[in-house]
Length: 397
Ligand SMILES: Cc1cc2nc3c(=O)[nH]c(=O)nc-3n(C[C@H](O)[C@H](O)[C@H](O)COP(=O)(O)OP(=O)(O)OC[C@H]3O[C@@H](n4cnc5c(N)ncnc54)[C@H](O)[C@@H]3O)c2cc1C
Image (cartoon, rainbow, N blue to C red; front, side, top):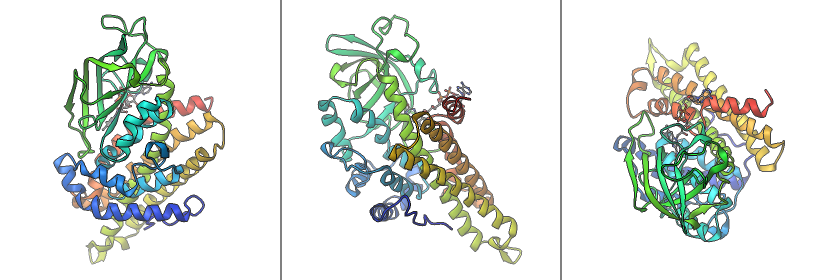
């Protein structure tokens, strides 16, 4: 149908060459396996190294840390191509470093950056971001995991949940409450953003326990509940200054939300493409489904939703890349882009399953998988309600 027509106003020849390389990799090494991996509830760890070899993992990171400095449209091109395989589980876990590493790169000490970032970008180690707790994910400022200072260590106690790559991660970027007055065991955690910090916790730290969680979609992504019991974490693993965690977390969300919006458009497109292919070959009452006006209109409605959301996403990416507009407006646009794109995905997944009929209800079709995955795109990384509330505040509503 639209098969990612070139958008030279956003994607140069270099972007397109990179996109083509990622597409070859996805077509050969991801797409043929996603159904089996999803059914198995995992994918081979070796895929991280392959993604690194193709140059996907390092995109946008500083050269000094083993990265490949690049603008955001390289990241978007890679995300779109991986999304075409129609399996958010693989994409979420394979890309979990994309939310775990940026705070380390932006605020970590040089020693911490050098220890953590290069092996992850080489695909040898896995990184995860741990913000959400059983008591709630939306209200980040209310998180309860404590980190009490004890000499040159923090002692961490608490729980995190729904953590992507939580089972396999070698490095965990963890939001903790370091408020010295109230942060210790037995003390009352101090509510509010001022006492929050980020720590990188190594996966083999004694006292860390991980439990697998079963979920509606993203089956091949590992999602874990983590509990920290008296985990001793060296002070040098702190990311930035003590008490500066909240700002870093909020800033990090913006990129995550932009990328989720870009992916959601491509998931919507993958559903539309599958529905079109099906409608062309499926005959009922002597004619292909694609010849029925009601089906043709449905397909155009799907394409239109994707195109509209994608236009907003590309415009936002361009504005972010070139610093166009004030910060509040950019945050509001980011929230609106995520809402629009994930709604487009949900619309397309629903329509595609309907067009595929009974086959759309069968495991193994992209549409069935993405139908189950639409909800996590609308909840994770900031739910729809939180996105609208944040946008309203930025817009002075
Ligand atoms: C598969 C999966 C992977 C995830 N991966 C990660 C990860 O890697 N790292 C991580 O830290 N987190 C992760 N999350 C957590 C995710 O970010 C949270 O689920 C999300 O932020 C919502 O938090 P919550 O689930 O605690 O819902 P809550 O905050 O309890 O909210 C519940 C519902 O109430 C609504 N709501 C909340 N507050 C308001 C309000 N003020 N007004 C109106 N409505 C409101 C919400 O929109 C939501 O619909 C993941 C989640 C899933 C499902």
